[in-house]
Amino acid sequence: MGYRVAVVGATGNVGREMLQILAERNFPVDEVVALASQRSVGRQISFGEDKVLKVHDLAKFDFKGFDIVLSSPGSKVSAEYSPRAAKAGAVVIDNTSHWRMDPDVPLVVPEVNRAAIKGYKARNIIANPNCSTIQMVVALKPIHDAATIKRVVVSTYQSTSGAGKDAMDELLSQTKSFFVNQELEPKKFAKNIAFNVIPQIDTFMEDGSTKEEWKMMVETKKILDPKIKVHATCVRVPTLVGHAEAVTLELERPLDEVEARRLLAASPGILVVDRRELGGYVTPKEIVGQDPVFVSRVRVDPTVENGLSMWIVSDNLRKGAALNAVQIAEELIKGYI
Image (cartoon, rainbow, N blue to C red; front, top):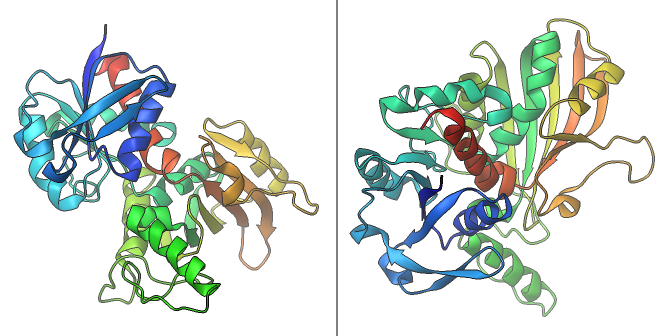
């Protein structure tokens, strides 16, 4: 049996990746439709190696008869069109931030809380978490199961693709201008991103945190355990694709690095690359286009009781967004629709 699938925001970084991953994983489709805003109508977009889809106008599209909608158009658009698709009978897997903290919408990472999928019927919507949250909770899950995480302190190193194609273009343009002794004013970021790091992702909140940092805290609690305390510092760095995170955990029970590596290596969706030698770890550049969450530099933190630190890297467009959404869809068709 095949399914009718619509991809909303198909011309964006994540939308294109969704189409690619659907094809790569041979998702059982009878029909796939690419949707975007009116200005993109008629554009052609690849679906796998040998198929091309024409982009249709989201505003005019009738979702009736469609089974699954993979949606990544931005929060404001999602707020309007995800309920419209859900009302027409489709199950919407939404990659925007709009639905994540809605109590009637499950927030799902299949390797961590796949059972939460069953809650989709309240609204016919399932939320895809934030990219930085996804890769972190995949790595935290086996540690939490074994030793119960009390507190997480995380610093992120997030690529420009997390802010969209225009942000990637800004990095490239500023990098080129540097070598001809020109300085381009930032448009997408608060400060120049080339040869720089920016300790702000999203807007500031009253307590001094940014919204990205808040997302990591509340999403981790919703997905993994509401008792976990999370303190995040989210930083934009001058890379194109791939997010990295330095994570330190405070556990209820002792867990040494040998056992931690064993647990991580045995867990779905994780690859451990951790050799204590020059280059014996993973960096964002190396993992572009790959599916796993990579974990390196696992070690005991002796400054707190039952402390453990690790380095986590993942392709933010794949596991951090499109792949996770497709994995949710795969779980959904196994027994929920």
